[in-house]
Length: 97
Ligand code: SF4
Image (cartoon, rainbow, N blue to C red):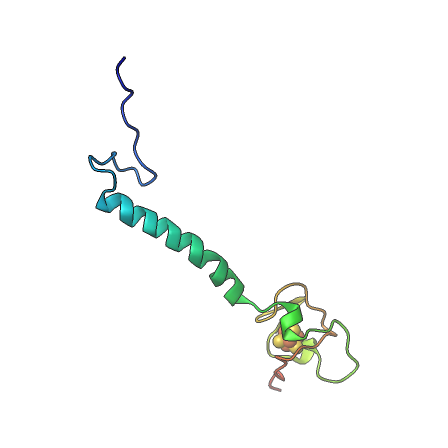
């Protein structure tokens, strides 16, 4: 019975004659690196509210709405998630007048 023709690998390269070609090795390394970097890049973009010591309501004058990092209506440049204008965290930086 004849064997079916070999199919291309994930990078579109024809199957190598040897068990492990250089192209397949680099392709696999690239895919592995991409999958390993993506979560850390995402995590590095913003800090979790808990890590920032975020509190949604504070009574003092130092509040998110007066912070240089605040992005109205309810976001922040450095802290992840929904941010209340009346909140506060350890990264508070007063907005210049
Ligand atoms: S105090 Fe500033 S840095 Fe902290 S969550 Fe509010 S807007 Fe973001």
